[in-house]
Image (tube, rainbow, N blue to C red; front, side, top):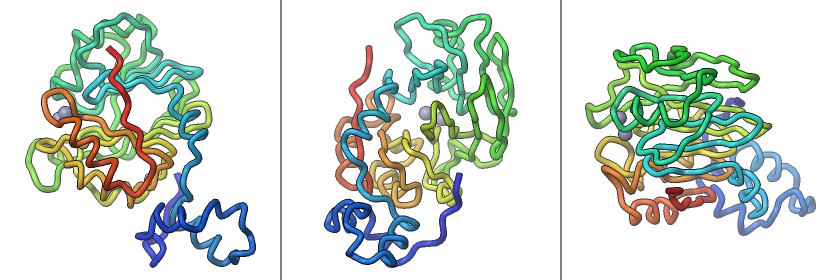
Amino acid sequence: MRKKSSQSALSYGGCGLLTKLGVLGMVPLIGWHLTLAAQKESRSPTPKEEVKTMLAKVKWFGHATVKLSGSKIIYFDPYQITHKDQADIILITHEHYDHLSPRDLEKVQSQQTIIVVPSGTKNLPRGQVRTIKPGDRTVIEGVEIQAVPAYNTNKAYHPKAAGYVGYVVKLDGITYYHAGDTDLIPEMKNIYPDVAFLPVGGTYTMTAAEAAHATADIRPKVAVPIHWGAIVGSRQDAENFKKLATCEVQILTKVE
Ligand SMILES: [Zn+2]
Ligand SMILES: [Zn+2]
């Protein structure tokens, strides 16, 4: 994960400014000083084809449940699962019932499945469980996985001291960030994923507007709103996020 320098005049222009300039790589005469600065500070708009490719292996099962199907099958926070599957790796962001659900885990795990949970988790699920702390990096089944902090800054549901996490996963050359239940936190500036799954439902996590603000710090190639449509958050929250975000946003259709 590259570390980004602090913001410049260009960083808040975000995707909007770059859209006006066109694809920078194809217009070298604009001046490469600007091009270099722009590449460092902000990403050019992601071509539609690239967005399609990056999301081709992604399924959203509602709420915070995301599946990546690449060389490995990876689930984040399986909840309200109505199908059977055999995950290679299951990543749990924290112990709340809508993220760590033993009944739903059983539907997508096999004896070989490795389940990763934050180290403070009180009721460990059954199976091959490994624990992780914010900041830890590991490689499981050849997949690079980093746990990053996830916590509230203006509410008390997810205190920083609890050690809840989000995950940055590199699978088949694409970097995915699942933020977990979090507010906008300074650590997001050090995450530079291709795809970001961000909670937008409010109450327990960022609101749509706060998540949109976070995209200016995270700068993913594409962001996907999660944590809406069940318990908290509405379609309108997902739409507002899309309207306000400074990057490409795809609202995924829930897979039943
Ligand atoms: Zn939670
Ligand atoms: Zn939650």
